View 1 (tube, rainbow, N blue to C red):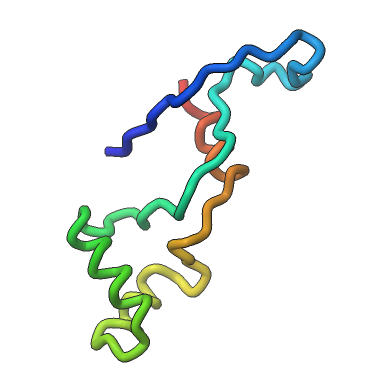
View 2: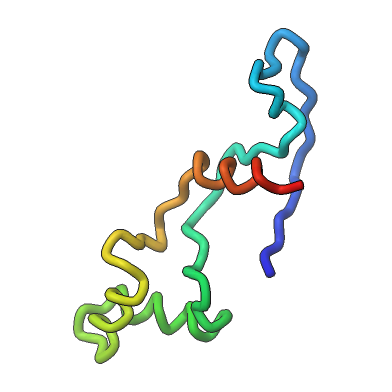
Length: 90
């Protein structure tokens, strides 16, 4: 389960509304860090993953890198990906 905190609601003037009919969809304006990969094993598993990824000498470094994927960067956050995920919510 994930928690989304709404910190602020802003209403845009009509001339600033997007033309794509998605203006009622929640939009993410900013964020920090990537989501944990699916099936990361909760907080404990994700903590282990981060420790292993950050330390090439960690005994599980290679295994965790393969499992998470070569492109997984826990520091990366994509507003575009977050908004794509929000757009499919009902």
